[in-house]
Image 1 (cartoon, one colour):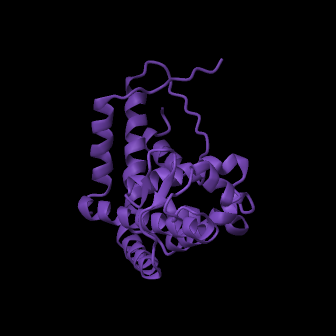
Image 2: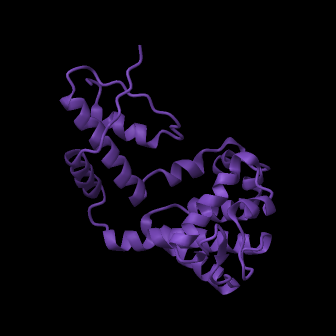
Image 3: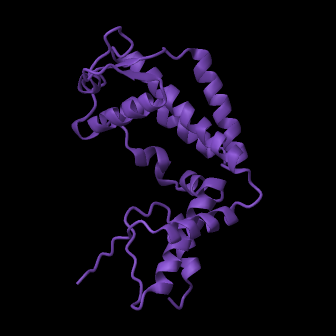
Length: 225
């Protein structure tokens, strides 16, 4: 029998996780980190807006419906939801306007200078966050192949693990400030759960990727748990 325990929101666990996450990035400016993460997001958003302009009628006065936009981009059936997710994020960023009748419209067409500025800011942000050069390459490559990914002609795995090489993935999920915080926070939650449980804690991880978070959790638990 497999027992699945759902971890509900717990303020104490959340507070402890945040404390341990912050301890793991002591010396880093959280304000600067937040600004740098925004720079990464900004590049992606500007890149997606540019892709939509080039492949759909989203810049037209009347805009278009998400379903029609996905069709114009030749999105595969299993990836059509991705276009809606992109649009939701672009609306939240103020780059796309929801017209109220199910249609959306681009607020302002990205210029080449916008893309260049977003790319340069992203590269600088990656360096400050402790990312290797592989992340800017990965982000730019993902944007370059965004249409192919959407159409199912290119897989995410082929970009994240080129020729089966996990170097880029290991660097992306390795020692940068974001991964340090998240891995320490996750390990803290699991360790706290292990301490308060009467029975042994059994963990099944799905989608482990390169196992960076698992490594931190197992290191926190030790061999006696």
